[in-house]
Length: 406
Image (cartoon, rainbow, N blue to C red; front, side, top):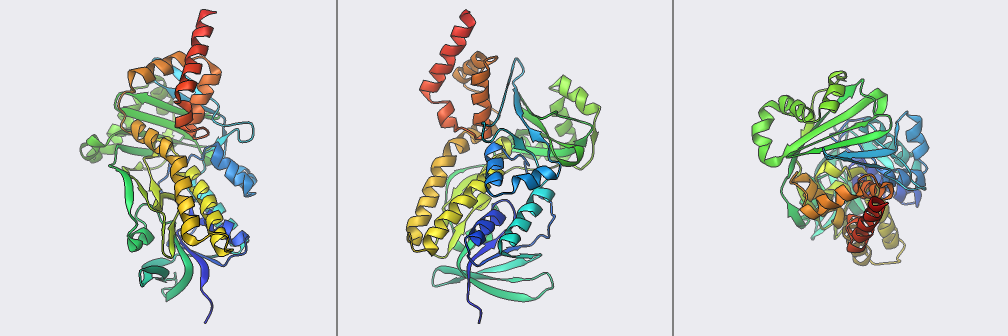
């Protein structure tokens, strides 16, 4: 009988494939299963912020993405109506973002995992997570030829999204829960060049965004508060198009373009899950899910993959116990993402910003260093906690007052 895998990963997209690749590169025996066959599409924000691009570069994969013709994004612009805050989302080391089609990005990641030595089984349907004496030990499923198989591993990793079978089987506790806040929808348009800009429009109870992706297409998104979800879902197209009429200049550009695909979207809950327990771990959206308004999902999945691969390497090498290494993984993840989680949920409500925040945004308008900081905060390059720290706010306000006095 063949020995168990070191790790079985359920889900082969932006969290699962990199986790498997990184573990396989360290020499571990890894099995990755996914019910999809790649290339395969999925509802997604698409945006890979500069820190996500930096992770691809560390893994030696960024050049592969660039070679597919994915256009770089060098400017984020946030249009609040009276003024626009526009700046650079990255740093000297990671200057630009990308917005890849998931058909291309996910296939690239799956191929990289296989090249690293991970065994990848596409078209595999997981039927049950195997639990023995309170410990997850493997899974049972059907391969794409219909054969039922059972596999075992030292750890089973759920990279299978917010409806994670691994999380359900392990009864992973949730915390920091918040209900769905925003109903967001998007479609692909041709004839709408963005020239390296990611444009976001904020209006009362409405939000919209546009960013260029592969094949000359632009992802155009719109959203409204979740309280309108049931009423508006009866005619999503009409409500989707009406959002853009709140921004006449953009609406005129959109009328000159062509919608190429049906409208897709969702209203997502917000939660953290404990990401580990006896024989199991969670990575990506399976362990931490939030509204897509800040488009952090891909970048967070990459960060999670690196943290989890490091934690499990510590376990497999005997450097740390499982509980010690995975507790550190959870604490580091939560400390890193909680400020952005709270900021994201605040934005997703589409409620007006507090007066002091509106005053700050108005004051930094036109001051490039402060606008760059604002954009980098939205991109996750710096933390909202850092941007909104009293000392930093005072510094930005003083600089704006000094410039205004000149």
